[in-house]
Length: 309
Length: 277
Image (cartoon, rainbow over all chains, first blue to last red; front, side):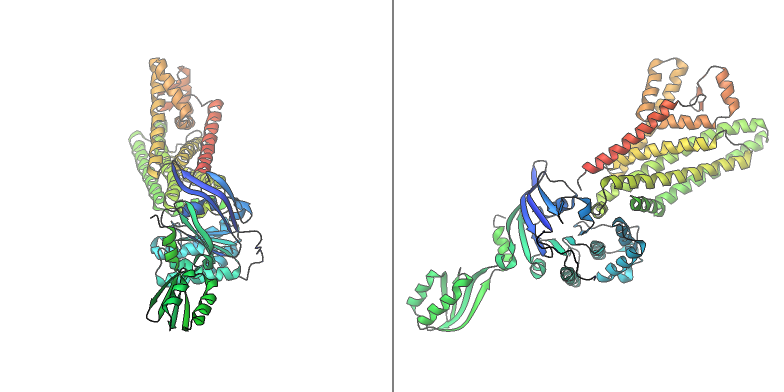
């Protein structure tokens, strides 16, 4: 991987959209998408199938035109050729020229990026090595399995040291080893200072690598924020002895308390209220042995947001 | 644009379709060489054989023109539509590559291939005839140029169609228009003989709507030996039958053919720019 990039500018976001909308005939594929993705961030774009994630990516890359709204990508208007010089893209529908070898596909993309002949070769070899295809460089893409083609797509996205990498469902055809490799690649890209826009419906994948996420539902953003914000504490589990009925009833001001033996659960308590809860328990004469905050998993939060489905 | 042109050329050369078409043309050249040999064997190597050879060559070049048209239509359609359908275009057009450059690159690559193909195989045919009969048409280079232009016109039409339609559909529509233009040209010639204004107009309109047949007629004129032209013109004829053209194409027609080609190239660019992926 090359050295950390020097272009980083966190005040000038990698992506900024304002009321971006796309209709196909009478069907709204994307409605009113307003979001900001700072540079250098791993941004997860979540949503069920058909939520409009791929449509949003196509609008960002100029592969489709918005029906309404506007946006900037790397400081340039949507679809600007100059911005695309610095973007790597792995499409959801990853297909490459089956009559070329893996090395040739990458060199062709290098040529489209106006890299010198020598740089094309070096970058192609390096990218193939990163995605684990170095030993298949001279093989025709037509003979590749789906997983290998997706790895090749990742290599294509890495060519030219992009400032931003857009990955649309990057692990859909990969086995667990491949998924792990993708996470490592994303971490390397982040270390290098690149922005990663990760389109996915695999929550575990997003949870492991993303700094912030937006959840898209039926063409609209249902929630956006850091994982910390989205997965805020939803309750506390406390191991306690000597809790009186009166003290238990008093705990209702924090949330919904439930006592089973020595296990006390307080549903709905906020993180900042936990020390006060512990103080109240101690003041009532109860003995507290352990306190654990319970957080929603991304899946629970996701399903909660998409409750209508 | 250069990268796309080179990529297109490389794809066409690597695909088996191109090899198959080249083999088909080689077969035509070999069979025609055999036929010309048979002609010389039965008539002897004199002027009579050369006169018959000149008309036989026109017929062979008509077949050659058909193969070239077929190759231009299918290769052109196969250069764009499959990339759009399969998703290959997604990663290409996400690069700093405008749709204008994408189409121009495709056009240049295809035009280079068709020109090379036409010159090599057409040249091989002329050399075969010269080797067997000792006959060379009066303007072989101009005839090949007109045939190449005909194929490039059809290639541009097919390129435009393939920005919106599947490969086979684009190629078939191009071929249907090519044959319609040819048939209308024949109808126009028959109309001339029968003094039928309607048939003549059909020929003229078809020539303008799809100028491929007009270019075939231009090539045909360049292939006719001067003796046939002098004889026909002295009789005040413009065409003796659909396979003999006695007058050259006008400058206005060539101008129209260039405008037609530019119009379809611009339409291809416009269609591609409007296209959502």
